[in-house]
Length: 319
Image (cartoon, rainbow, N blue to C red; front, side):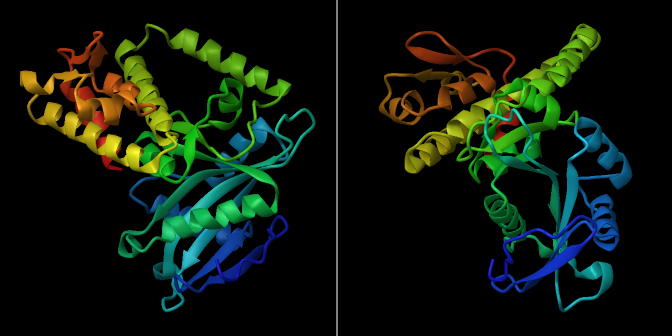
């Protein structure tokens, strides 16, 4: 980012930076004008509906009063008004508090989208790069609240599923998202004050047990898939990881297209390709399990109820 100033504006203000390589103007901060611009664009996007900045601000500050919303918009200088809005992002600033083990502030991305007319130009990546540079400048760990369909995108940018249950209980404020963290950041297990949120979440889960078992199972499957993909993304060898993803996608697509075909339902571990691209790759076996394969010693065998699982995994691997 060629003109990044290296600091964030005070609450209620905004700054502008020019991203020369994208030919875009970046406005970021928390002014009322920018807040309205980003919220209006979010409400008009395909992914998000009925974004209420006041209600969201209340949700976050109930978690911790010191939290602040931060807005960013990439604008096309050749256009005017709403037509100029190309990409928008909203993040939550969570300053350091006593007892935080990581010793770091936090930045949590909770919304990001690019308008259709501007997609394919790397603008979302430029917005994420801005957040990462802001995180470095403010000594912050970086997180994202990701919809299930977008988890693979974020994992490709170095994010993994957050393993701390109490930190997840505090920061994952939406029912349809997963909390991911940047894998290179220091570990943060939250604070003792997070235990209240964890207890409340457990109580809610206990109350909902049995009320809608199919919905609960779908949520569990989604969490398991996000966790498996996160583990695969952490495999240290990029070439092996990419080769494994390609093979897993092929296996999932085969099952999706022809679930009753016996040659697609068995994978022998002794096979050289399977050994190199599944047995030896971290997270690959877990992805197989998510698409319905069971470990039967010398081979993995797909169970009977495989089509829907295979379709979900194929969709996630294509992201």
